[in-house]
Image (cartoon, rainbow, N blue to C red; front, top):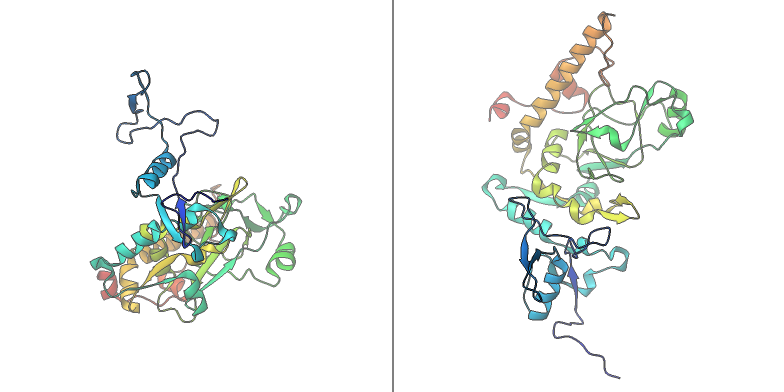
Length: 342
């Protein structure tokens, strides 16, 4: 018996639609189309009655109409069959718009002389290192003096220590660190890898916060031995919109929990042509975080010398140090004044 094949069918490619809507809400009702400029529902004539009704937001239907008519849309494309894996049979994974937008950005004058590489390629070359968190202590273990960091504690670019959420030092050493220290460094770059919408939003571990227990559901990055840049350049690169948008492609849904797996290693970032360029363009990040670290340390010194206040500054349990000392401790080379001025 012959099998009907539509005109668009191909043995070499697979049709993929990454349409974000299919006309229905989670509750099964029609999803109205809203004008983003006004916030009001758009209306159209009902073909049967001629009465104005709410337009339905059904991008999937638009993709199917385009498929039949031979047109193209932003969310409809054909992927070579050899590039599609049943281990990642999720449409958004094959949406190459984000990668295309990155390459378009790299053509701009601001990136003249830059190359690009995926996080996975940089790991293989020793340019960056990546590790996960330590683990998750049980609720009954959370009585002690070592801060335990959950995904929800990574917010607004900083690691926020909850003074009431700590575990015993002996538990941290034996069960989670597997040694005398956490293995973390000041200015490590951290982000959630699961369970929340802020996957791909990076935070900075400040000096004084190194001895923590971090939940496993966190990715921790730092420059490797072959890096020609410091953590602040890495943060600069990871927070570019053209880089941040790529996370939309690699984040899937697993039941009710988002999970990035190892697909984050496919994220592509710009690589500066030399250290001077890397230091110059990332100077605003460097100045902000080193200035913040110095201010936190100064405030802690004051609070330690006075018993008049009840005030907690997360992770500054150390003597005051200047910004250059903080950079040196984190393995970051001092930036020349002329680079900062540029």
